[in-house]
Length: 288
Image (cartoon, rainbow, N blue to C red):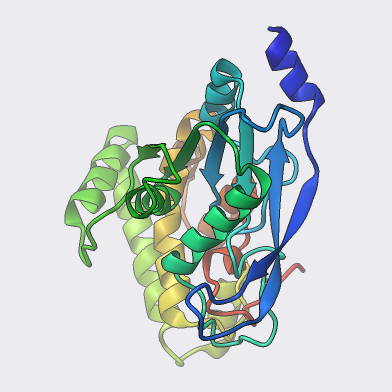
């Protein structure tokens, strides 16, 4: 209990690392990369738990998973999380085409910061889930001499363009809530797809996009992908929010109704649409 209290009392602020832009030699520039180190007061040989950052801005309030904190409590470890390059405020200047955005570069970013702030750490555990789990896995595989272990959840290691089993699982869950839910969501998705990809009614297209926080210049494919993918994100937090059940129980699921739940879901994750699409830097969400 004493150690857990000390952890809470020594939460560290955001720090900035002067990061190499290209770890593989073609570009000698640098950029400012943000990170948070908690429990930095522990001795230099203390273990360190390295949590791989997600898409979006580094959460300065509570950036660490409960699992990360639990492991740190038990092992008396430091905790590190790095804001991924091209996300949040860790964006290199004068690189509009994002030439240096890759998992390979991200792996090197993390290792550089770890070697700088915890060079004598006696054990390094890297942790992540889903996308960040894949990065954690690759980091451990590439540098077993620097990373002692990995704690990885739901990390995709095989690219599959059409993953029908995932869709069927969502449909099954919707039917369990009520039989009409899937049909109502299917209808609104068909309507959104037809309106957003068509130029037949530009004003209606603009109105629908605004419901989801997009501007009218958003790429159709990205906008529709994120609108559909949001359903999976809602299921992930259903136990805490009840959003899916509330949505299914709506008398009618219109684009505006679904857009409201879309925004609430992103708010829960402290994200906006741009955080999930780094290739569209000009896609600024509407705030009015």
